[in-house]
Image (tube, rainbow, N blue to C red; front, side, top):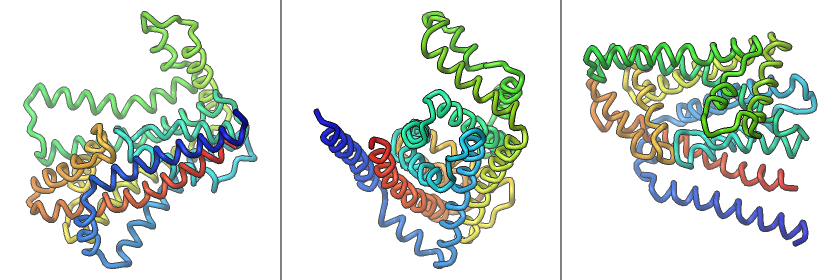
Length: 330
């Protein structure tokens, strides 16, 4: 089989899968309801919501670029931004929990820029760890807001378990970074504790090498690490700002802690094993905002506006996925 035929088969296969994902999502999405909800916004409000989302995509990309470009100065920002959109598209339209596109990040760095799989994986590993650094802090804060607002009823034992979860969520990412900085590799240690997995298995050696390279970045480039952490903080704040703007534009006034609680319920819904948390995200907003005294129709409008934006950006991401995948195959 010649190279041109292989490329054609690969492109056709990728295109078929992506079109299938998009068709499935559109077939099951409440498109008319989304359109009706979006029409409640003024054009400038819709532009602000979409523009801010794109801006914070850029902030997340900047974090990844800061990591990758430390020792690979030929890697530029704008191609990585396209990859970030593609990653979102793959993750959003496939089964949860909003992951799955990271392999595309590794593939592009390997094929387009010549990085080894280990080094490319290390950059993605550190990027995700820094993303979790803020995500888990927000999730912990969100859980505290949900408990404060009485959205979830907790007895004493459940509350103790929730507090333990809070501590774990907040502590794990910075603790992992600290271990990497001190040449300790927790993921490798966990793999080595698995009884049926040989301690010198290829997977263990690969993960250790990726963690080692992540640790070297922390040790050699502390200023870049601080910039990357700042990008995570800014991107995390952007998620809350985005939710606050949508509720405000739809005339649903919420104090800060209720904004956090509503956002938290929606974020958790996206962890469901459904493309884009389809159905679960809408239900989460009806439930959470209903607890705050708002009608199901108002709560559903929030969910539908958010879904409309995400489907638009996710569709763009799928288009870019096709371009990046076939381009990487050349």
